[in-house]
Image (cartoon, rainbow, N blue to C red; front, side):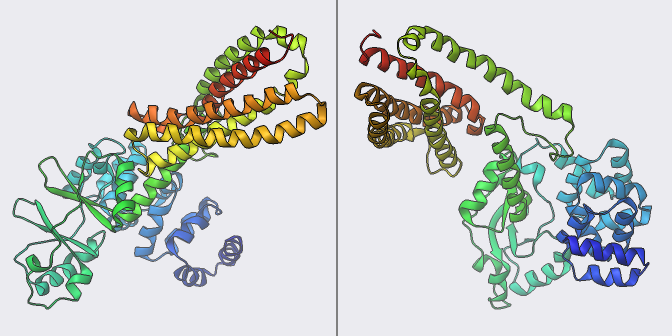
Length: 448
């Protein structure tokens, strides 16, 4: 990519614009949009104007919102209209949502009354819902059509449709009664009726369905596109697999941030201001700092144990680290299992029992290793036994907590990813310290 940028910049500097134009024809639209991140203001505008009309629109939809805004500011009305005319409805909606009000006004000037009405309707759907991300540009057929008539309609309106591979069979009231693929049409006789070859087992999405559930449906049913229906079961739009992939990426990024105790950002890291970063992080940090004082209070309670056997303190990092890692392992696995629906809420008892058994067996292995290590290093069988038993119980408890917290959060109809790793670790640390010193004060002579 860096070599391409250097080559294009050299050609621009030499004013060999025809060569740049030919060079751009050979590059994919997505790769061209990546090139724009490495170019400066004037270079971006010049390169964009050298693109062919259709490719320019494709590149435009892939650009970051700040570059889109910059381009809209310099494009003539004709150039802007050419771009907007090539955009699909869902891309136009995304553009309007990203732009400031003064830019939106200019965009809307170049959108026809009918399309503007559709866009306004789509903008009314809740954020992150199927309705807000669907497109209304799809191919609809009638059941009494022949294959020949269907193919003729596809040729006529296919160029303006999001996809031509999947077609939807509708009634007069726009209720969906079947689905037929382009493959099925091409392999059927031209005089065959659509009713005879359409698939009536239809997977539908409601307009208010959460976008994360929509993405899961694509993964589950392995479809290229899914129909979206309103509350009266009328087909109002479709969602394609590329939209589902974008949702999965967005949701994964949000989950990673939440699991790290950071409020999700709307923008990229470098484009997010310092103060926004602070606002996104400080809340959790304050909560976790205050919750850590509980652990300190518990440690103070066992001050006598420290004085009687100071060596106990040196093992606290190992106990807390092992407990935290064990809990995080279980939490990560269960969050993933919930997301892929391998585990449901009703499976909580099975999950708990399995994690307790895993914790016990892992603890046994850790006990054996520590018995040998502590005895060789300190020649103290009692200390080795204390640490071994502590590891067994802390690993079991940690895995129980790590597996149950995501399920509890899911039960509360929240995202399991909000079980932030630091919060989970703080809770587990507290349990680990209590278990450690309870076993120590019970087993070691002179500490009772």
